[in-house]
Image (tube, rainbow, N blue to C red; front, side):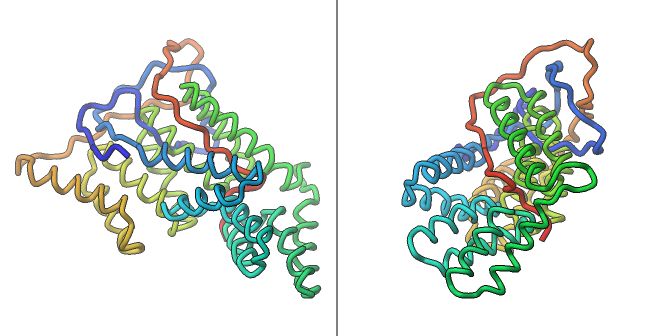
Length: 326
């Protein structure tokens, strides 16, 4: 990970979630790059976690359980708490005969996302194998109820699958440098499933890199309001405050992370870097406010100059793998 926190002005490379209302949607057209006073931040941790999840998912899908377990445990060690990660670890534990470990992982997946149908069905199967038929029936009935169509016409399973497919498209657009179009797709996915916080996290990071850090901060705050223990989102909120020149707020977030997890190396690293820079800076230095953001409701007449950044691997999720409010 690049451990520098450069202070050069941020042009079009700041990522984060949209604080806009539900009706505010980006069009797929590219807009003129946003200029800002925000500071450039090297987001090695974000790219690293995406790469780790990609490697873990690929290993899981090809049946390489040892490799998948290693990568998924690395994600959890980084503070990621997403339902699909625990679901995959639960299925790996079940395949290895560790039924107790499988039950624990699948229950955590359900705690993070009570509508995770695949995890509910897996729990029903495990309890049936252990002769706990009443519990098995309870989980099976919950899954069956979730699969019934709602008044809107789509059952939760279908909505979750569509949301994740839309988010996967957004991931691909990010890799291609099409951040504005990616933001539109992430927002569309969240309209279907507002509590899929892994998607909201990715939207937040993308918005920040698109030069909209204040909107990013709002989205990270939504995640933390629902799940205060998602330390990766809190770390990213601190980075977002830092890009806006709000160093005191950034330090506050990273300090809060250490209060929850005293061994969190990433939080320690950022605090060490920022405090070291402050000690070397002039005692009269003041923080410059970030310039006003440009709304993402772009008009077709606006210039279409693409944003560029190094390719970052997509962060795909499994069906219904969001972090619902427990």
